[in-house]
Image (tube, rainbow, N blue to C red; front, side, top):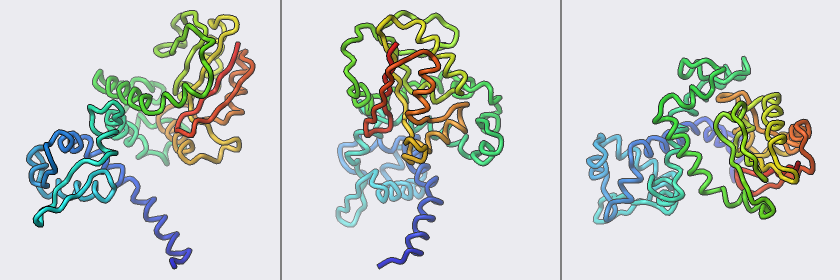
Length: 298
């Protein structure tokens, strides 16, 4: 039986090497490994994959073997030859053409989020996002960093759509939304642009980007535009009441530190924000998925 010390060493090693796991996944997506294998008529050798990618034979083999160890790919051995093939996971979520693909979000994480996280210690020191360190963009200009080009903007939006295709149905099932015939999913410059009249407004993964003051400002605008008897659906990852979990949401909150001016919040903190903006009858429901739902009525 392993000792507690052995378990601690293993845990520390897993944590320390976590960035390597992320980079294996990111690199395989960027190179097109999963697309190539999904489109192939059968399993391919490392040399065939390397030729298809225009990559080095040695580097490709090492990457493929790591993907097999991470259960992102399957290894077949035929006649002493190692052949590589897709798994159910890669076909569903890593092939770019799949309806539930996370390919675009993974590329965004690799090109933007990962670089900001390289400056996490500095973010903790100064309490600001790290776009200046990562990209030379002022910390106040968050959207200039996220949307550094039309291509990056499109990548980010496709990434969000991919996440929604996997988790959206669970969020929308959290409440009965049938009493609200006219729905407005808010995006764009909602701090200044006129808001269309609706029975239900949706703020999906928006409030976690902003400070308390800006959240109250935005929510007050929504409350004023909302029809009598209408409501607001907030879609965010909820922290536990004490703020000490779940771990995924805590990591998301650190991500808000390195990338935005906001944070993830507890149900109580969302109730406080919504009450300050004039909303009443606030209900918070967990989905068992990364994103939860909060419904507030006018």
